[in-house]
Length: 183
Image (cartoon, rainbow, N blue to C red; front, side, top):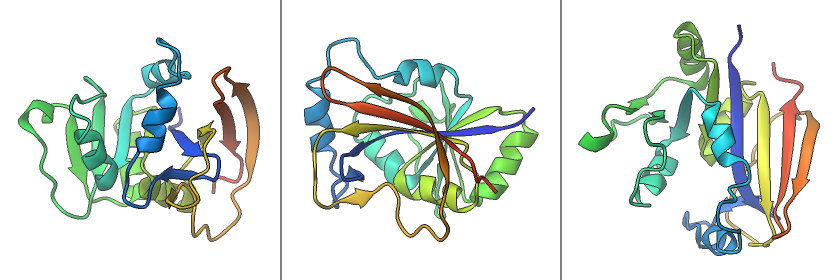
């Protein structure tokens, strides 16, 4: 069996995942237009995930939301420094300073079969090491003009194969790709 690494993320039309200061107000405003009960496939995706790997900044952003959204899903936070994990999350959240490859190899040896990679820097680090298999991007119909880009400083082209597209009546467009030059 193999280990599948997946990205499931939203961006502005111009490719930003947050404002420069990390603010997601634009995404909150867009989500207010989504009909109740619609989550653009996120719940179904999460049911297929064994573990979530995110960066420290993303972890801190998610903590600021109040209620932890990942329930009993195991989460590993990548950080070169020790991070504080609230007692209530200590059974499912841990941190690691491993490189993406070291973490990937460890999780593979632990029989993990599907990882959700989240957070701009973490996604970029896994991509740089050829460790992303599939990317689902939900494009939100807003142009921010600046912010934190999903992709930057890519050293080599990363070829993708379009697997599916889905447009939603409220203006979102979801693109799913397979990474084909995953070396």
